[in-house]
Length: 600
Image 1 (cartoon, rainbow, N blue to C red):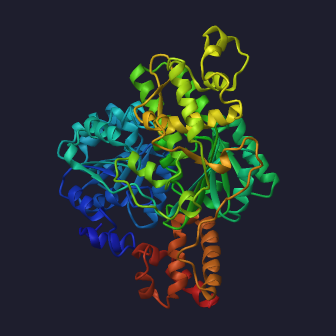
Image 2 (image 1 turned 135 degrees about the vertical axis):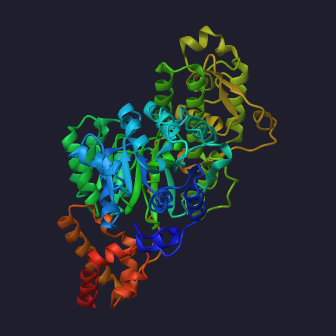
Image 3 (image 1 turned 180 degrees about the vertical axis):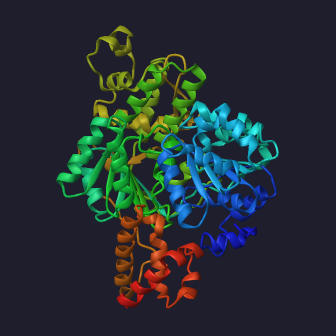
């Protein structure tokens, strides 16, 4: 590239007139040869932070990326911008030619998988070439405390250390304080080189529902999003296939994706999803990291994910273009029980188990909260408690509450009277006065709390117990797994503090009432421009088929909307529109101007 000024490259190559947020400062640091660890929300422009410096600094930027499919998409997109980019992986045709171009300085960026980056042959190759920077994308995979730890990522320090004069930049959207510290330590980046751009995704509406009839609830929600692309995460392969079949039977175009499918089928389904505007992908977490489709309008979970980090990462695949999107989750007590059973059965050490138990508890607290959803979400990542967001279910429709202070005192008393050694199921039997061998064996049928809760159903006692545990009033003992009282139980037992639950979730087996909201459209077009926007999308669809790339690689919806609003008359008009760079004007400018002229 001829230009060496970051702002000029941003405009002429990528088509943007200005940097966003911390981009400019981070890019300046990397261009100056300083290391950076960057935590930035999905869709906020992390890639720009290593792509621009790769074009500014002499040499080729090496980008470590976890997925072959993601590498291919990013390389395709960069080539359309006139950038000399290649991927070196098991699916690369003529690998020797790519190696020769890298060694000869004929590439701007080279994408590699961590396994290859750790090989001795690649170390020798990198030491022979002129390297502009080393970027480690999805850097949370470095940390054993991250939600998607990969041992090969932990070995990347070896590549970094043989390039001591080359700046290294680690990038992730998802990392709590422990994970951030581990990333810096493992990659040799000084802690003071950490930049956190914030975690809030204000365009995403968070909404959570208790499972009652999950397939019907999901269908109701997805039907409210007709014509939009979305992802539905299921917890098992069988549930994935059943859900995809149910959606298709209801007239919703849907595909399944899980690790048990033939690799060719997975690749085909991912390609179809990437190129469609209205497809729903029903998947396990095998369909995960690096899904670079900006116009996903919703992500739904059919159960609790593994952790807050996993939830944040997965919901972050919605609304990458900044337009309104919805994160919709259905959950139930069985999700927590299965998660704890999975942890119990695992062979990890006790420290790791306690960490994972804590993750489940924090996720349950997020699901249970009666406050703004962003409070437990953002404070988990170390941010200050935010004001009410106005864009989650609890803010938009404050839930009707049921005061359950008296049942809470009974439950906490039962925990204390039984010796703080038993789980919720046993405590519910004691409170309901059940004729149970284990209750009698421990003498709990003789306690004062035996039978004082016959007026409530077992599911209500379980519901209340989960609520108190999620609020930190009770905690599980690390040794025997029973519930014990926290200090915050005292004011409740004394009647000094009240306890409330969501009224609609309290009564057992009550018919579910749907409250599935649809995100309010922002940046909507005037009626006169809607036809032009539709015509531009149809042109993009045809062009994408011709170029054999996903539609968003050509232009994002937000760029097409800007074109529809601006009605450009010439190439100069196009150059002033965000997302339209020099290479794309050269490639597509005349075609766009013709669509505008014909449509108007």
